[in-house]
Amino acid sequence: MTQVVNSIEYRAFGEWVSDGASVLDLGCGDGELLAFLIKAKRVRAQGIELSEQAIVRCVADGLSVLQQDIDTGLSEYADNSFDFVILNQTLQQVKKPDYALREALRVGKKTIVGIPNFAYYKARASIFFRGRVPVTASLPFQWYDTPNLHFLSINDFWDYCKNKKIQVKGSFFKSGNKQVKFWPNLLAEYGFFLLTKINS
Image 1 (cartoon, helix red, strand yellow):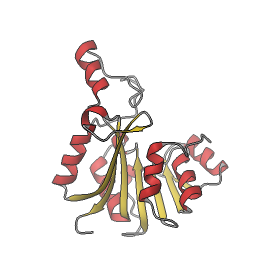
Image 2 (cartoon, one colour):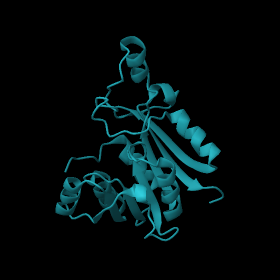
Image 3 (cartoon, helix red, strand yellow):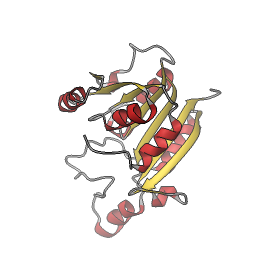
Image 4 (cartoon, one colour):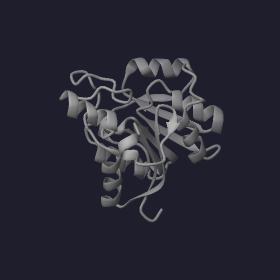
């Protein structure tokens, strides 16, 4: 498994997630984030993933991961059954992101969302100067093999949360492995948000 302790967004997640919390990671991939949180924060972790290959890697590393399509919902989980639900680089890949996020907010007392920023300046420049769909470090796929189904910017996500009355309790932005503090919609490759339901 790849060493991720020095990943700047994982350190931010470590600041948001409380010690010993219960965590559900939706679209957990090969479990790097879960493994980090188990080691750093001693969380009680559960993952959900669709890829059989990723699940095999997770299980081989001792992680608890179930195979499930999160587009079908989380009906087997009660309201507020986890302290944190994580959708890191997952929301833009599901068919029904609005439904998936509503389910995450229902099941988790708090929800962490990480998204690639499609309005990052290098992506804008690729479209403007080259007339091509952007291929960048945060968007490394060609148009024909990308897993991304929805294309949103950091500002789009802020607007979505405001319109849906979702409270943003914290946010963090990065390019490469450096934090971006100014003009994130232009300068950040990724945005990360700590969310709760309204009045939570």
